[in-house]
Image (tube, rainbow, N blue to C red; front, side, top):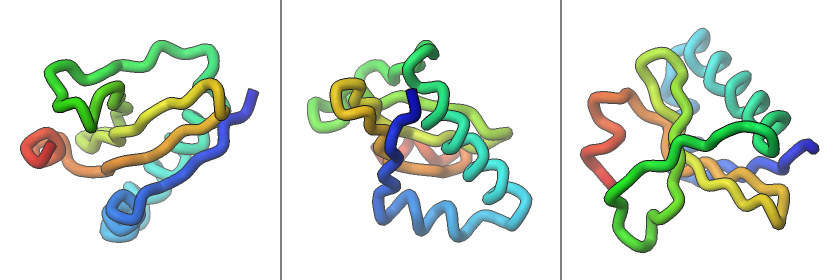
Length: 91
């Protein structure tokens, strides 16, 4: 089952800032996530504040894509796309 993808405004801006090769890798990984979200194990972040509960991560090289999965709506919502050294600091 294919999930719909919503990319938040901040994540979209972060994706635009990546160099072309990394941006293309990120876009492919998001597409892969949309196609495989139903059958995969989502790596949830622990210790998140209530408004970020259920946030999961996906690795693209040294970058992380943080997202929520909403199975009932067949939706993946992308929250952040940042280097692993920065992404968790701002949560």
